[in-house]
Image (cartoon, rainbow, N blue to C red; front, side):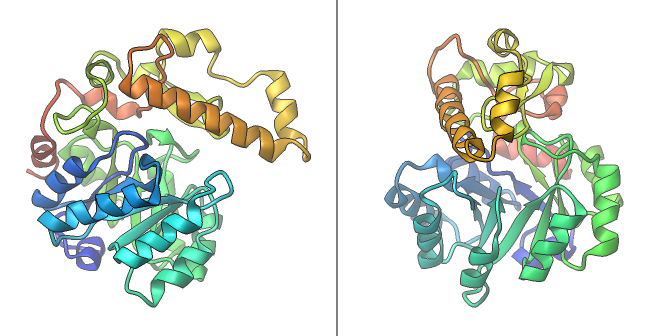
Length: 313
């Protein structure tokens, strides 16, 4: 499968194992690299910049193949600039930017040979990041797990391909070879695949979280603003049902208040991240498990290698 993305990163298949908050780890990335694709880990998965640096070096010790780090580039991430310094210092192969302007990242990376891919949900943002010098676009569609977009891939991909000149990588809605082929046929230069890799042997989340991907279906995926202040797709567990996935009128009013909007959103994000971390690694009744509609195609827990083989063969 040779195209713009495989040539850009020198990989066998145009697939990125998506960066997943709390889920992605070095074992998963190494298996991805060994299987001919690439992958990325959120910088937020590490409490300190030293831990982030150690994770990058751990992967480098066993593989010389390209991988990336996902960086949140707005004020909700107070470690943003220090994390960026680590990525530049270690010369990570690519950075995926999320939830903010990638301008500083692009300026620091373009002269150092580090590729910058930017999450976008519409044409307006895509054109902005292309003008800034992004190397590729991660087109987040309405089937993505975690933070999601509004547009279907059938709409978003052709729109971006028509008006943008850099590679378009589709994020959301790919769980098997047929779906991969369909997305590439729409014009995408690659795909970012996340949800199906949660239910893998190399993943360190609770067995109950993995099994939930087997037991629940696409009909059990709901959107909530209560975990990060932005739309987030999660499994509709009994706890999620009890707190009501939609925001209350009071929360909406606070979010619209200019004086309190940013503060409230940061508080929601902070509390949401703590809740998701507890649910991912500890037994708790507050089960908030992030996933996308691709859980429909998860039949059992497999190895990362087996999942990649099912995507490309």
